[in-house]
Length: 171
Image (cartoon, rainbow, N blue to C red; front, side, top):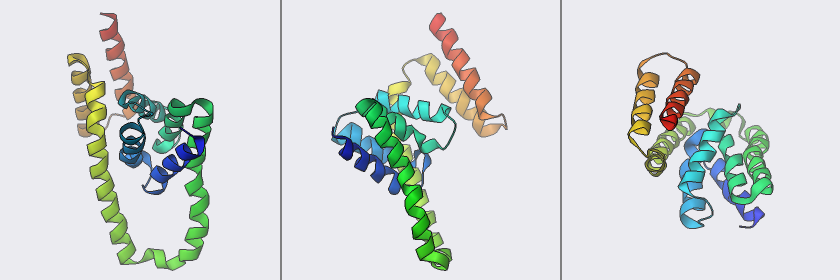
């Protein structure tokens, strides 16, 4: 895949979403389904790498670029993540107070809900690829319930899940 095309596809995913993992369905559709330059397993690894690195959740885009085209691809991914930040400043200056209307807020809420639905639909194939045995299913379910029902910091849940995974691999 040509670097400029990779950059444009990753830029599209960052411009058409509100950041974080809401760009996941767009990335999966473009790079896994349509162009077939990335696998679901690589996309899962990129999301995991982006989640463990400090910074915004959308930084997994850099890892996606790396999986597709090595270091030049990672640079394209980094540029795709940074470009919206440089575009938003002049846009906010232009919009000014117009961006604080009830209509704009309703549109943003609607798009956010739609993005949440898309994230769920993109997560199913990734979960299918990563939940390969009974131990991974139990660890994922336990981690979900612990995070959802307690105030335990996510880092401790991730550390516990990693230790259980390592213990399962050694057995």
